[in-house]
Length: 150
Image (cartoon, rainbow, N blue to C red; front, side, top):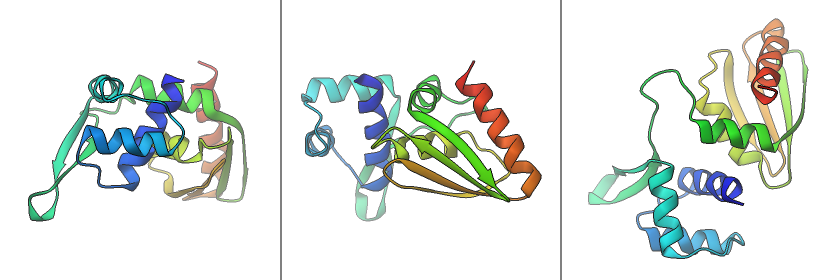
C-alpha cells in the first residue's frame, strides 16, 4: 500500500501545484487512499520531497533531483512492482502496468534519465515511449527487464 501511495504522490505533485500537506492528503483521499496528515508528513520526509518556488510567491512540492545518476530505490521499487510486460515496434516501446500505475511508472522511467528516450506518455495502465533509434528500443527493454529482475 505504501508503494502505491508513494507512486500516487509522485503522480499528484507532477500533475498539480500542491502547496500544503493538507492539500496533498485531500488529493490522496480523492484517489481512494485513507490517509492522515501525519501519514502524508511521514511520506514527504521518506520520499525527500521539497518545496520549489512558483510565480507570485507560491510554492509546490517536488521530488528532489538526484545529484548523480543513481535512481532512487523507491522509484525502482515502483517500477519493479508495477510493470506487467514490455514490447516494442520500431522506435516505439509500450510498457503495460498494473491498473492505475501508468503515471507512476512513467515518472520512474523519466527519472532514470535514459538518453535514448525522446519522450513518454502515460495512461492508466500503459506507458508509451518514443526512442531515438530502432535498435535502441530492444536495448532499452533488455536494460529495463534487468532492473525488474535484479
